[in-house]
Length: 292
Image (cartoon, rainbow, N blue to C red; front, side, top):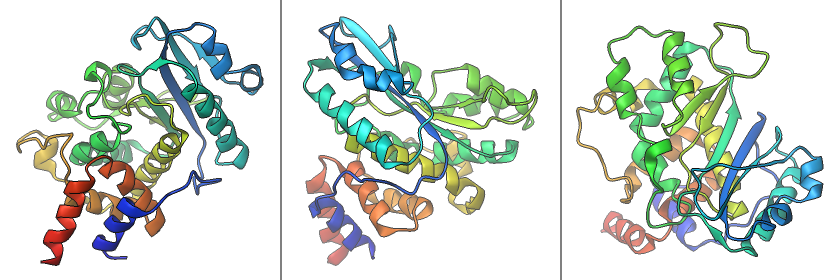
């Protein structure tokens, strides 16, 4: 499909919650919510999920009277996984919740060496203005970025250093950036990270968004070994080009980003629908200008 048709489908088509994706690596989620009623934590993450390995915790950064963090077990792209998450999402929507300072985090397993870790950071930094807007969860703003900030300062610190484990250990210990690296328990000392944590999405109770985050971030990680480095703007990565507003619509860049990540048009449409969000009038204006 051409870019006009992709955008028109993203604007006009009803895109259902999917029974299964094509995600071939394990993943995990951290779902935050500021509750007003303490018993809701047991209703949302019920005994059935608890027996499956879902953990109810507390994150004081979340806000609300009773801050809740739900940590899932290792999940796989299976019908039961998406059914469980959909049911939990439905229960959340029945509760009064404050999402103003809540996050939704996705952890994806990767098989990277140090160079690929660095390429991921570069690629993410280049398209931050796309990823951040995509990650607003339909809100008009991003939550406070104290724990999900731009990677710009990271590059200021490391642009003159050699590529080595120190860089990734440092990023894994500083949970204030939009991405973080993690290590599985069985990881040998000195080995590169094998989990990427995407920390940027606003908290929400919509399983459709949760599924789309998993799909997009998974394909982002799988794109890195195949990436054409000409797409990475090194000047932007080192902060020499004026920043693009993270809440504005940049459809040309979003289309490039989608083409890099996805082979299937349907995945591009799902991504673009969430990226465009409430900016439908601006997206239609973009289409009209192309057609002139």
